[in-house]
Length: 470
Image: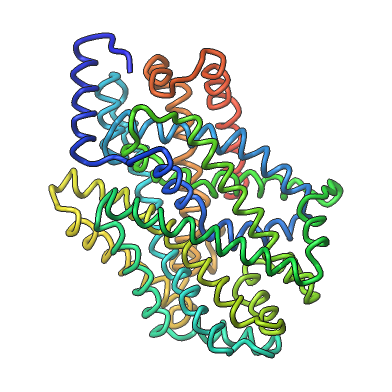
């Protein structure tokens, strides 16, 4: 980074010194695996296939890819850049940047919004991750074999109605996340993703290979890659825009936290593009693994959220070796959820280390237990508290349980708000020269990124924000 004053030299030197003590990713590949692990989650394996099915297939995929390019990548670059420039947890990175560049101190709240969003998401994400853990045993034991749609639905309903079982699997999943985060950047995060991400890719390719034997693989390829724009509605375009934003773990301070461990000699632009391409590739591979199974069994591709835990289990129960491949599929789902869960806990643990002077283990234990406790409220809202709708006096929140409220509040308010604030801050508030130095882009590439993050990205995120609220 170029130095323009002795103050800059002091600031940059302090940041680099702090980074050396905190630990850095050992390589560009390590960061790519970690960031991809965060981005690749239930949204890729669970949500992308069913929203593609609901919105007509190929045309939706094309719009989604365009949205990744104009919304996802520019914001990811901005978040990673902020994290590396600050060299601290998201909140403290924003605080240091505002002090260094003489900005309004209120901008440090951008980091706080993201950290809060990620923390709340993890509390109910862990519950859903627990469902996947539970279903590995359900599939492996043959409970799905030969079952009717009603029987498969009853298995899922039975799981949701049993708070004790849900608590057990929620605890197991949160324990897996905490065990990795407690070990730090290299011994924990980096080592975990270096094992989990390759394993996830292998499992996904095995599932795609299996899907090719179902006799409906060609139909799935046509569905995913042959566009029919007559099936694409305005609502579908906005869903693609929203998912492009959320699938990359944007707006939840994760990329700021991971960016704070990124060495200065690694290109932010190249790594952000690489992560986005891999994340999108995983989503498409998930579609190629899932839709042939769905089509081969005469099931509905637009089955909604029940696609993973009701529709697919029904299909696996009817197919040769369905118990084996059903188990592998839910192990794949666990790996995807686990790497995302790790990234969601990291920002708050990083902040507790810095702000409260706690060691890594104590920070992880404290944050993890609070998040685990909050998850119990989500569990109870699925059964014993299913009639409890705390904010029903607000029309748009009428009838929403605690689980529903956490999902709505994070997905529709905190994440788009965080992404919008990042785009505005990077596009209009931060020092252009500082950003250019950090991003190490040519003049033309920097102007393209800055124009996009100033004019296109904020408008797109604002549209999603408003659409989700109304």
